[in-house]
Structure formats: structure tokens, C-alpha cells
Image (cartoon, rainbow over all chains, first blue to last red; front, side):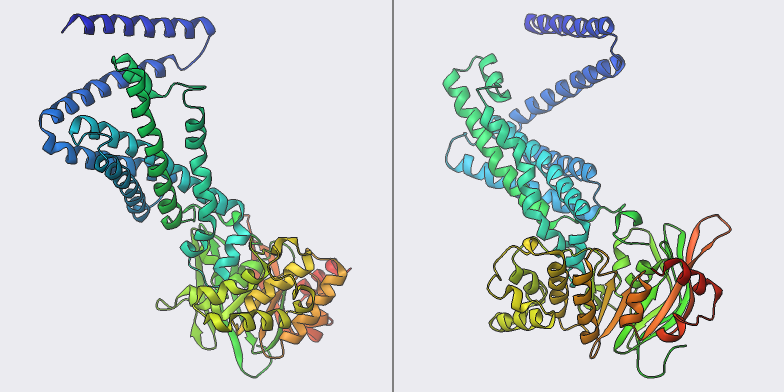
Length: 252
Length: 263
């Protein structure tokens, strides 16, 4: 253990203790939850740091790592949507398509070197962003269909399958799921300093290089999320599987 | 049970339950080919639910169970090899509130034909003919590209009708199609119903007894019954010629319904 680790540990303990103290002083609940969250972050980040450090020395395993991450992202996004096994495959396909297209462009142009050190964290960030968009697009689609159920029924009553009817709502759902990213991108550097930028500055990189990498991440997210949103909203089942009788118009 | 002649819908011991709770119990009746068949009854008697068994629209509800058999022209609508989407092309539906699509008047009518790969060169003619049959053509002929949501309620309901006529349905189910309309627009729709019924079977859910008297040759009356579990379940009280059922009902429950619901 080097000196830097000790200093980091000391700072973490003080930060957490101060946050806990502030919660006690303010009479806030969920103190235990905060401690658990901090403990989880500690364990998970140390574990992921060890795994990634190992992959940097064994880059042939990077693909396995990304495959596991992709599976976990699809599982998580689909669980938020409440979809079935087929929906999970749709989400997996959506994230994989978006991430591949983005990483391909970044790698072919040489914007990032073709190495595990640069491509692995970039791809991971793309998969993470796509996961958020996939669940948003799926949830928006199902909400819109539920809100405008009589119109959805109109399509179905003309012989459309549920997915064909859902496609009529897909554009809007995809657009809505992209709003958060656009807002985030618009305010980058102005209202907030985005994560990659801050991380690189802290790591000692020049602000110009940090801005370049941050731009790759932000614009890359636009592509990965757009593809993910379109594929998810067009292919996922539009019907909430728990649609209750009273939500269907005129069941009297 | 009803008038002799060809039969469109044949329902035998039909019951519907949502999530294990029965809402329609043991309905047996036949709907004759062509003409208007009205389904009447108080709120909660399962009129809409029963109507939706005829084009499998109840399939959209999770946990729905249909008991008994429903057939259309001898075909069991719930047989495993039957596609619900194919059924819904043959058996159109008009809803309680006009549910036009957020697109142009033309695209509303063209949706069904396009979905089912109708030849596009004949599409203009088909859209026009459908709007003509729905008595809307003269009002919208110069505005086919206009957003359908800008039409009046009565026009929207005729557009929904045109949309379903574009598929050349053999039967049309109507779920209280005039309940959201003013008397003038209602009269317009009733004239259309009468005209369409000359070569199409129309099943009309209504709680307006006078409407049934005006347009329907055959009427069925549903009623609610309290179950042992304390819930309400709808069941068929009587069915027959409208003139008979709605003036000299055989069942006391129909008489009570008529006295409560006559304006």
C-alpha cells in the first residue's frame, strides 16, 4: 500500500464521517443506506480496478469483459422496463448495435488508439449510456401507449399486431428518451464539468486533451443512444404485460 | 333463439373473466347476418366486454379468460390456428370516443390497406370510396392532407368508420358510437348505420333504448347480478326482435331496465 492510497483512504473516511454527521445533525433518515452505498462503491470500484488492471495486461480477455457488461446492461435495462425474455434480446441487440457503431468510428479514425487501455473504458461508457437510453425508450413507449390506449386500440382493431401498433408510438418515445443526453451535452462545460473531463484533469492530463476525450464521449453517446433508442422503441413489446382490465377503454 | 336465416355470430355459453373475476356469465345467442343487432343494458352489465369477444379485442387485457365458444360464419374465433389480426380485418370496430390517428385524414383511412399491403395505385380510389360510404367525402375532399384531429367529433367518428370500411369488413362492431356526439351528429351516424346494415352485420352496444328502437332489428338485453362473492356479473336477460323485446319484454328485469333508462 503506497502513501497515496493511505491519504485517499483517510480522505474517504473523513468525507463519509462528515456526510454521516451532517445527516445526523439535519435529522435525515437513510443513514444506513448511505453507509451501505458507500461500502458497495468501495468494494465494486476496487474489484473493477483489479479486473481492468488484469485485462490491461491480458487484452485478449477484453471482449469477454465487454460481453459480460453488455449482458448485465441489457438485463438491467429490461428489468426496469419490465419486459420479457424477447424484450431482453431486443435491448441487448439495441445496445450492441449502438456501441459497435460508435466504437468502430472512434477506432477506425484513430481518435482513440486501438488498445484495451483506451477502448475498454470508452466502450464501457458507451454501453452504460445505452443502457440508460434503452430503459428510458422502453418506459416512454409503454407510458405513451398506456396514456393513448384508445388510439393504440384503433391500430389493433384494424388488424395491426401489437408491435405494428406500437411502432406508431416509437418515434416519440425515442425522441423523449434522448432529451436527457441532449440537455447534458448542451450544458457540458457551462453548468457542469463532465466526468471524463474532471477525471482526466485530476489524473494530470492537459485541459485540451481532456476536452478532446470528453467530446468523443459526449458525441459518441449521442450516436450510441440514438441507435439504441430507435431499435428499442421499434422492436420492444409496447404493451405493459400487467395491463389491467380497467385500463382498457370501455370494459363495462 | 333469434330470427331464422343465415347466422353471423354464434355465441355458446360465453363467459369472460379478468384475473379470475367473472364479468360476463354464460351468454348464449346468435346474431343474424346483415342488419343491426343491439346490445343493451345498464352500466357494468358487460356490454362492451361481450362486444369485444367478437373481434378478440379482449386479448389485450392481461389475465383475460374467455369461456364457451364464439364463432363467426361457422369459424371458431378462438381456435388455436386463428390469428386475431386476421379476425380484426374482417370484423371492424368503432369505439365510444372517436380515436383518430395523429396523422392526415388520408393516412387515417389508408392505414389499414397499407398495413395489409393493398396495391398503392388503387389506394386513392379506395380512400375516396371509403369516405363516401361514411358520408364524409363531400366535407373533406379538399382537405385530405389535413390533420384528422382538427375535424369535429361527429366527423372524426365518421372518419373512424371510413377507416374500418377501407378494409371491406364483413361485420362492424360499434361500442356506443354516439355517446360522445351531439344529437345532430348522432342522427348522421344512425343514418349511416342503417345504410351500412344493408350488406354488413352491425353489432351496436348502446344504453340508449330509443337508439336501438330506431336502428336495430334485433336486440339483446344484459343485466347485472350480484355474485356470492359480492361482485357484479353481467348476464343475458333476453334477446329477440327489437319491437318485441323493447316494447313487450318477457322478463321483468328488461321491463325495469326500460323504465329506468327511457328518457
